[in-house]
Image (cartoon, rainbow over all chains, first blue to last red; front, side, top):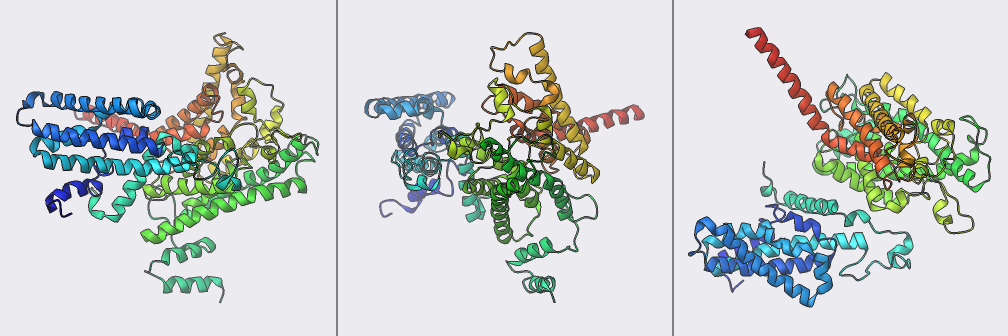
Length: 214
Length: 401
């Protein structure tokens, strides 16, 4: 990372692993449960959050000195809401089917704790460039987990990836299905998302003992 | 010098190394160990944990053997190649042909269940460096008893791996689990592969591949028939003795009662839980009967079929009895206090019948009810203990005042 100083690159890399918003801070779980039944939806959700958090952090950081601290939550909400509306409208315009699938969860990005958390914890006290990096890093950390969970849930639950039938056709009985394989319906239910996230947390913490809190 | 001393030498040789737990496990599996249980909920007397587990397994063996005969009997009966057996000792039931089908279908389930489960236990024991725990011996026996006979083996293997890892090992192994591992496995199968776990095709061997052909056979369970308000073709004696389609080990109420008496006599199973579960089921059945008698529900309602079942009949259809005797009494996941056991058992029975009647998609609510109460058991215990503490404190105050 020649472009960034060591301190700045830490802002991006930390949330990807050792300070991941989902597996370590356990934020943003609701959307991780709700929309990860398909890989495509997970990816779109990740990109949406990347945009909202990246831009939002910069905006909040730019106006941080003129926000009265008593009404800062309302100001933050307004900023997120504006950005989420942009995302929502773009999705509706260019990916209507997908936006119907994501339905209310795009709107619910507003209440995603990761976003408000980063505004409060970082953007209010740091410059725009560093806030931008922090936003990108945290959104990427969120997206990585979403994509991992979405990958396994779609692969094992529907036998597809991005809608492509990678394991064969369950009705025509081709590919794996010819041997009697069947899709695991449990993977499509939300409890399984929680269990997959739990397994990721388990693996992560057993690899890095420092993450285990008492 | 036999196998025993060889194993003993191996055990000494590998003492303190990574593989030691694996050798110890084989040693104690085959021979009487010289250790007793030191801690955990299984502590009871100067027994090894293995003896507790073996007692439960012995109580289940009759159900397993009966299940093998029944698997063959239901198959042949559905094909029309034999006459219906009259009563428990009917001549067409205890036949060699029935047993062959039973062994052919049931034994692989037992082997897969034990093989996969024990393999995972061994792996965890080696990684974590503790002894292999005997807890899986009972789970491995329960699992084949509570699944349909035609379940594909790979599904069972996946479910066992899931149940042992998620249901038990992540919580710390035998004695630490919140949920009954055998029921976790069944719940996983039920939600993951519903077409193999419910409906009218899976309970009789051969029904699935014959579906849609001229040779189609049906094996609707009694609960399934009731849920669809159809006539039930089995008489009470068949239900009681178990000559009905169902999961492998849960059909014979007679043998389950024998198993229950054995468990109560050896003080391994809690009679409080068994009794209160049955009472809870009867209570809910009575309430539903009352609703029907009062005319609140008419035969046009989709609940009418199951609601109008005489309350006592709920005990001999479905697997409420099996759940009460072998599942609810699991000492790890049940309530620990005596008063708590009454509440815990009663609610299991109560909720089981409620799910059975209200949700036609889950005609067998027993496993869900037990899992739910497993989760609440510590809460029940907490309030029972706190209530006792409060009572004592009051008494103390009266005395000092």
